[in-house]
Structures are given as structure tokens and as C-alpha cells.
Length: 264
Ligand code: LHQ
Image (cartoon, rainbow, N blue to C red; front, side, top):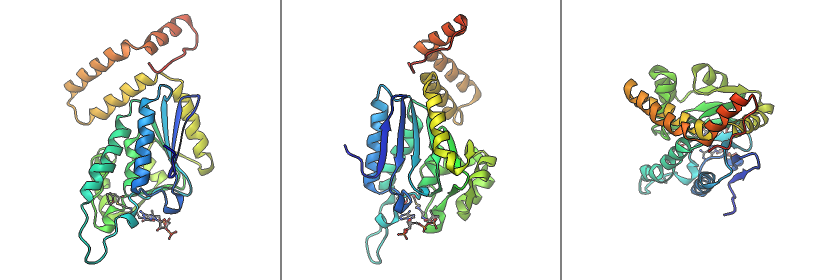
């Protein structure tokens, strides 16, 4: 499938790069871009080579959420069922990013608004350009934060800040987002792509099967009690301990050599 609204590649280092590419519309999502992103994520899941996904975007913005020109309601027209869009596109997208059995890095290159502000929160390591910002823009048009925002925000930054962002729609700078614990790191604008790629390449040399188990454990921890989480850690450690990478990691440690991991 040739892509028109995204750039997508999987390189020899195992880094899958998915870049949203509708810069004139600040990479807002229309149906065609949703379908392309879905297909790219399917290819990442099925690839034997992909070890890490880097999600980013072209131009001055990261993503302005839903393309509102696709969802405007003319006077007198039938009211839309936005729940259908969420069922068909946004929920599968955030589930698919969160459940991807590889580390997912998100490089937020500019403004991230609406669903575009919540997509990074479904990723594992979020870097943002110093000039980037996050806007829960939904309330400005009478909508509710979606794409997992109402679940992620209170857990990441606390209820008081979550409510302020979601109900006031204020712009949160990248630096403030980092200070609040919403994202991992702020990087100078000009260095963002290179730093994100360097991190992706470095992670792609690591035991990525184990990293995927780590993300599973941490993602589930919000919902589990302590005992349940201990049991989950046991189950995942059992899986990790049967991986080729564990054997290689311990072997290399004992031999005092650098390990060569395969993500299996
Ligand atoms: C856009 C958009 C956009 C189209 C900028 N659409 N063109 C789920 C289910 C179903 C339906 C509803 O929604 C959802 C989830 C959602 O995501 S709802 C939230 C939708 N997003 C927003 O409400 C954000 C709307 N955008 C903005 O508030 C601003 O554009 C931000 C703050 C993102 C950026 O502001 P500026 O840097 O001042 O840029 P701009 O406003 O001038 O935008 C640049 C261009 O991009 C402009 O087009 P133009 O032809 O005038 O250059 C905008 O119309 C276009 N654009 N967002 N979501």
C-alpha cells in the first residue's frame, strides 16, 4: 500500500519510523491518514526486523487531533455520531500503540492538540522539542478528551492538573509537561529528530522482547493491586527467563563481552 499521508520505513537497524505527513493541516487525522497509520502499525507488528517504533510528524506541528473539516456540522444537518469515529479509529489506534510488543518512542516536534496531545501518552518514551506544546483542545469545541486522555492525565500529573488542562484547554509548554511528569525529555528543536533516532537505534540493540514485557508490566500496574502486580511480575519474568536474549545477556556478562541481543 503506497502511503500519501504518512512517511513510513523500517531500517536495517530495526527502527520503524512513522511520521505523520499532512503538515498543512498540522497533521490532523482524516480517515485516509488513520487507515495508513493502521496499516503501518500492522506492518510493524508483523515485521521480523522491527525492534523499536519512532512516531513523529513532519512540519511545524505534531498533530492537531481530528481534522475538523471532516467532522463539521452544517446548520440543519444531522448530528454526527462521534462515538463511531472513536470506535473505528482512535480507540484502536491508542490500543495498538500501547499494546505494541516493542518500545515506542514519540518525538513531539510541535503543537500537539486534541487527540494529538493524547497519542504521545499511549507511547512509552516521549521526547518533545522545546517549542512543542500540549493542548487538551476538546473543551474549546464542546467535546471530551478522548484517546485515553481522561485515563492518562490524572494518573500522570494528578487530578487537579488534569482537570485544569482538560477544562480550561490551556497550552502546556514542553518544559512544563516534562516538569509535571507528562513526558520524559525536552530536546532543542534542531536536535529532536537526531536525538530520537539515536535513542531508537540504541534501544534497537537492546533486549527488546524484555523491554516489551517491562512496558506490559508498567502499563498494567495502574490497574493492579500490589499482590496482583507481584504475580504479573512473576509471570513476565518467567517469559523473560526463557528468551534467547536472557541467555545471551547472562552469557555475555559471564564471558565479559558485549551482548548481541536479537529481541527474542
Ligand atoms: C486544522 C486543525 C484541525 C483541520 C489546525 N483540523 N485543520 C475525535 C472523534 C471525532 C471527532 C472529533 O474529534 C476527535 C478528537 C479530537 O481530536 S477533537 C480536537 C480537534 N482539534 C482541535 O480542536 C485543535 C484545533 N486546532 C487548533 O486549536 C490550532 O490549530 C492549534 C492550537 C493546534 C495550532 O494553532 P496555530 O499554531 O495558531 O495554527 P493554526 O490554527 O493557524 O493552524 C494551521 C493550519 O492548520 C490552519 O489551516 P490554514 O489553511 O488556515 O493554514 C488550520 O485550519 C489547520 N488546522 N488544526 N484539527
